[in-house]
Amino acid sequence: MVKRVDLIHAGMLLLIMWMQMEAASAGLQKADLAQEEGSDGNTISHSQTLVQRLEALLIQGNGSDVSLRVETPNADEVKVIQAHSLVLSLQSPVFEEMLLSRNSSTMVLRESSDCAAVFDKFIRYLYCGEISLRLDQATPLHKLATKYQVQSLQQGVTHYMTQNLARDSSSGHVAGWYEYALQAEDIVLRDSCLQYLAWNLSSVLQSGEWVTISSQLLMTLLQRSDLVLQSEMELFAALEAWIIQNQPDGLTAENALRAVRYAMMPPRELFRLQTQSTVLARYQESVRDLLYMSYQFHSASPLQMAKYFDVNCSLFVPRNYLSTVWGSPWLINSPTRDDRSTSFQTQLGPSSHDASKRVTWNALFSPRWLPLSMRPMYSESGAMQPTRVEGGRPRIIITPATSSADFAGVNFQKTVLVMAQQHGKLVVKHVYNFHQSTEENGDFLAEANLYRRTSDYLIDSSLFLHVVVKPLYQTLITTKN
Image (cartoon, rainbow, N blue to C red):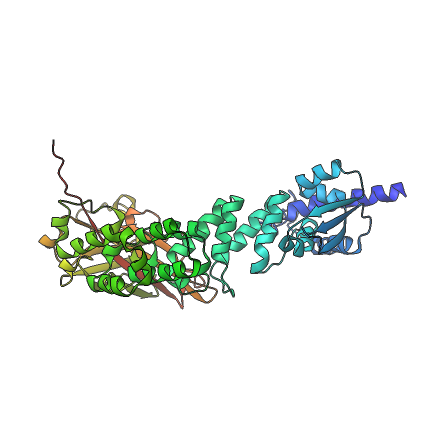
C-alpha cells in the first residue's frame, strides 16, 4: 500500500512539474512546447489528456491525503474538497506552510461567502492551470489567489479585470473593483479602473453605479483635469445626485462642491444653479468665493484677470469637454491610405468675454511620418526628401489657421482622444496631450497596428478620434518688493 501511495505521489510530482511549465504567467494561457535540440521538428503532445487526468484526480479524490473543509463566518455554508497535499504545496506557499504544521487530515479554512462560492474553481486551477469565470467571480478569485499567494492566478485575474472594464453588468463593477484594488494594493488594477472611470466619465455618470461610489473615489475623480465628459454642468448635476442619494457629512459635501470648476460654466448656468439647485442653496456659503471669482472671470478679459489672480489654479483649467464649443470628433476612414486633413472651430476661451470669438484650427493626420533625423539621406544635389516615408509612425499636427492678438497670454493645449470598441461599447482607449504635434509625446498610437484589420484601434476600418482644444492661461501677477 505504501508503494502504491509513493507511486501515486511520484506520478503526481511529474504531472505537476509539467503543469507548472504549461501554466502561463497570466494563469489563463498555455505556453508552447519547446522543441528538443536536434529533433526533426515533430512534437508529440498529450497535454490535454494530462489535464483531464488531473481534473479527474481532483473530482474522484483518488489518493487524497487531505480534506479541505471550507466554512463561512456564520458556518451557514460548508464545502468539503478532497485534495492532495503535494499539489497544494507546489502551487501555494501558504498551503505548504499550513500542511507542514497540521495535526489532522482535515484542514478547516474560513472564507467569506463570496470566496467560499468559488473555492472549488480556485482549487481546480491549482490542478489544471486554467479557469473560467464571470464578472461577479473575479474579485473573490483574486482574493483567494492573493491570500494563498498563487501569483499566476492573481496576475491572470487582474488581466481579466482590466480587459473587462467596459463589459455591461446589472449594477456596475468598475468602482467596486477600484475599491477592492485599493484594499488589495493591486496597483495595476487600481490605475486601470481609475483611468477607465476618468476617461469614460459621461457614461459612468449616467449609470446606476455612479451614486454608489465612495466619497474617497468621488474626490479622486473631481480633482482630475483629464476627465472626459460633455461639460462641467454635467458633472455638477451628477455630483448633486450623489449628495442627495448619499447624504454625506457637511465637510465631505463642501469639499466635493469646491472641486467643481464653476468658471467653466457660462454665467446663465451659474445663475440657474444659484436659483434652482437645492444642494447649492444649502452649501452656498462654502463656495461663495468660487462663484464670485467665476463671475469675475466671465466679466473681464483673461489677460486682465491674469494680472490679479492665479489663473493656473484648477478653477480656471478646463477638463476634456466633448461639447462642440471645445473641439470636434474626427472620423478617419482607412487611416493607412494617405494623409488626411480637417478644420474645425472652437471658442477662443471659456470666458464670456471671449464668447463671440472663434478660432479656426487646421488638423493634419499623417499615417507614416518620420522625424527629419530618421529620414534617408539623398546624395543628389537639390533632391527633396518626401514628407511621408515608409516605415514611419502616425502623427497629428494641429495649428491655428490665423494668428491673433487675442492669443496673448494663452497656451492652447490640444488633446486627442482615441476611441475603441470594447464589448460593444465605444470607449476612450488613449488620451494624448500636446501643444502642436503628437510628436511631442513620442508614443502616439505606438501600440496600434493600423494595417491589421482586426486592430483594437479600428472600428469598421476607421479611426475614431475626438480633438479637444483647451486654453490654459498664464499668470501675469507681478511680485512687489
